[in-house]
Image (cartoon, rainbow, N blue to C red; front, side, top):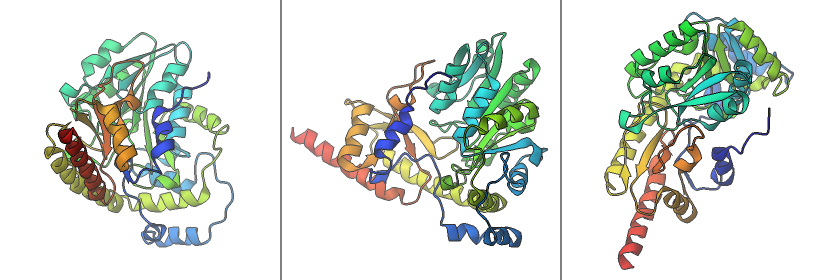
Length: 384
């Protein structure tokens, strides 16, 4: 592989994530204390925690963890699971395992940068398929069919989508899986926000459940709200692909943290409790966020996303979204992500958007700081 370009979003976070007073663009759900998580453990897992030693664990992941992960899929077993140190490592290994220098890939746009950058770096060619704002950022299967080439080896999607929060409709997603199955194409599906749908009827099946070449990526960080565990995984019934990814992991994390594996097992067994909690928090925060945007119709255009805990709002101000976001963080400590951090080499991305998050507690504190910034700015403009 050649040298990868800077990861725009992560570079921006390196500068601001732990300095800004109000992190209003967080992509994860509210986390919990260690004591609260341990209180959810059954007797066997509590004993496993109390007797824990700090040795290495298996590259594929601890058997108990893989079994717990497999239980979140229909028709899969622990043999179909490979664990990673977070979702990013899994995504990295998957792209290297699936693509070669003679291949073509298709990815949705806008996207999380590495889902595009890695295929562009590895494959002979990559085609972007647009998620259009006028279509509520929904995937159109016609666009996918138009992008196909004889050497297409992988299609990569992310639903609920980051940064838009969109979800493909059920018919489109199943048609996509059928298309991939017919042509022997791997469907790489980033499902890290699955479980945070605004309406349960929007929840898609997981790609790994649908056919052998379906590949599902998930992690404890987003919907579960446990990013500090650094536990992600790939679910796939194509064991040859899993074996290729395992060999790549030998050059990366080698194995996961043993304490994190036990804690993730506890969380997965208590997943309904965690997901119910986080869905309720997102729903409450969406109401507050919607009321905030409605109070400034001359500045913002907002549509509630289908799922996840981030959305892609439109900024209408004459100063432009880049200036607006920069002034918010520098002057008032309110961190948002302007659309320049989601630009694509494949397709244009609307340059009047910004990502806002709504998965964490105390959103009203950040909204008030944001509101005061707008009022102060309005006063300055009036006096000028």
